[in-house]
Each structure stands twice: as C-alpha cells, then as structure tokens.
Image (cartoon, rainbow, N blue to C red; front, side, top):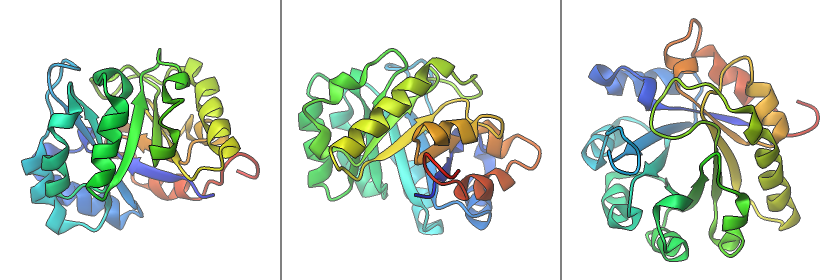
Length: 222
C-alpha cells in the first residue's frame, strides 16, 4: 500500500493559504491536514470552519481535519458544512467517544480518533468498527515544529497490527516531527498517512518530500 503525505497547513504561510494549498497539490499531495485548535484542549488557537469553507472551492484535495478541541461533538456540523472529508477527534477530549464517532459517520464523512503520546490504543477497543483512521500523535499536540518522539514507534506498529488482525481498512496516520530523516522509519512501522508541516513548507526542497513519501510501500519492500 502506498503511503500518503498529508502536508499540515499549520506550517504554511497563513497570509496566502490558497496559494499554499495549490502549491502542495501541484507537488503531488492528495491530502491536506488541518490542525484545528481551540485554546482550551491545547493552548493554541488556529483556524475554524470559515477558513476551511473559504479554501474548499479552490482545491480538490482530501481535507483531513484534526480537532484538538474540547467537546468536539459541538463542532461536527460546522466542519462538515465547511467541506471536510474526514474528522478526527482526540480520544482524551470527549467522554462519549462512541457517540461522537457515530455522529460524524451519520454526516456522511469519514471518522478518526487521535491518541496522544501517553494514550494507549486500548481506548479504541469498543469503537474499532467505526474507525476510518487512527492518528498516532508523535508529539504532544498544540504546536508545530516539535521533535518526533521515538517511543511512539511501537504504538504505530501495534495499531497497524490490530487493524490487520481485525481485517479493517482504517488508515494509520502519524503526526508530529515527521521529516525526510525519519519518514521511511515511520512508514516501516505501519503508517499509511504521514503528516508533515515544517518539513514541507519550511525546509529546503520540502515540496519534493511529498512525492518521495508517496513512493513508499507499507511494511516490507519500502
């Protein structure tokens, strides 16, 4: 299975987001990652539905929105209306994970769950059938430019094994500190979607990383 790189707009030039989205699309991206932060679940505040809605007519990219917000159930409808294709909620941000995932699926889009570095995959035990994606956070959420936490590699492998054992089609996404140095290692651990922000938008020849990662296979034969 080919690995997709999902550039994170958190590291893009916010004064020209439409141009930045076109730039990654022209560079071979199929997904774009949207980091949604509320200043409560995490300290930072980023973008909301109006920005997503403004970008939607200008791109055919798959919009992968990661809600780092408290009570994510309050925001599902507005992001669906804005045009996202997938909503990922933090397992730690809601006490009704099953209900939130069902609410997302009822809106006709894909649903995912993100796990902070200290959160075990066991929290997914009773919601696996609802999942289109599991996001393994490889940094603590709330800011871009952090260094990858190597201790999450076994978790990536565990999530990938669980999906395979259950014969599911869910993606394994990894977000935080991904770059040209560690991208292959992350893919070898079982990731099918790699989120990268600074490594794409701020590094020299960063756009070329999109096509490079898109050539990776999963597990063996990378």
